[in-house]
Image (cartoon, helix red, strand yellow):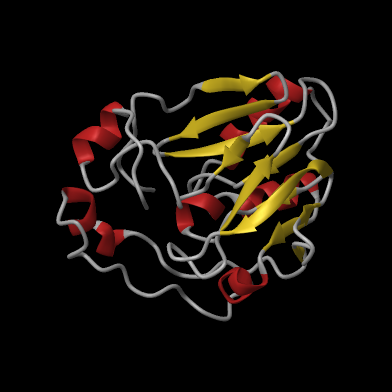
Length: 205
């Protein structure tokens, strides 16, 4: 468990009638689909949050209505923390970029964090963040090379590497909605205060 949280943790917010995001400690996961209907989950939150995520999903979409798929923006611990629990509960495919595969099949760990970046408190404690890979090879599938998104015909995925080799964002042209993963964020991540109070400002990763 990472012993920190934000003031928004535990809150679900709608961006549009069919897109909502849920804050799980210090990270957001996204649910795409109108309440009660077919839906897709983007990312899998923090470690040990599986039961919490399953409960929130059931409140929005109903019991016995798992997502059609789980889409991963990338494989960092705060985006796949509860992926194993969710797969065991829902038995659905998980899609990711080919360059994230080594980190999602137990083959390779991410590099150790660079604690000198930006110089803020969160950078200084980043050496405590888990960087070990998960192994979800039985459920893992590759995002289609043509940029289409499984189960979401109105969306496309875009490769936005840098924060991780295979990080992707998801974009819907009709309303210009972007799920940017950690390529573009709205809280300055090197400031613990700004993370905890969720001060909104456009920042890089």
